[in-house]
Image (cartoon, rainbow, N blue to C red; front, side):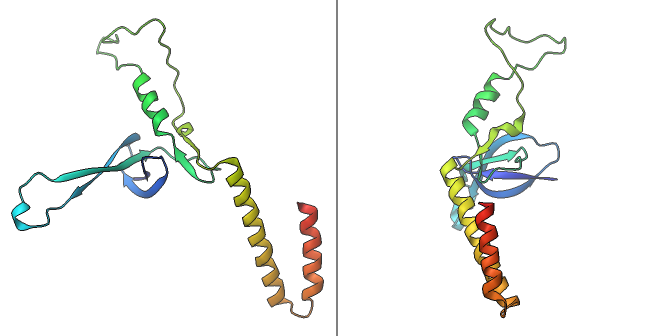
Length: 159
């Protein structure tokens, strides 16, 4: 078993699930509603599509990964048809058709705008600075002011 990501219709992760080791690609994710009353048993169950299961690993380095489901659907439609047992295509491809394989991980894209990433980084730095100040204050109460001023001076140089 391996981990797969459940995404919503916008491509953002909503949950994680397990799939078979040989599962790859993207497939719909449905929820079946159970019958509420005894007389409903035997009736056709209602199924609702909630999103997709993506069995493609998420590359590192993305702040808020988003799976580009539209590009995936276009990519799948353009894949060459399977060959028959003689190695020939069941239907001839048009001459202008060109197919180039694509790394599946490239369908994971950054879900944040550049401005949002900058804001996230700035808020993280502010939080770290405040945390360090609290640690210095609690561990070294007598040298608090001297240590904080040294830290602030170093921090300004790092920016």
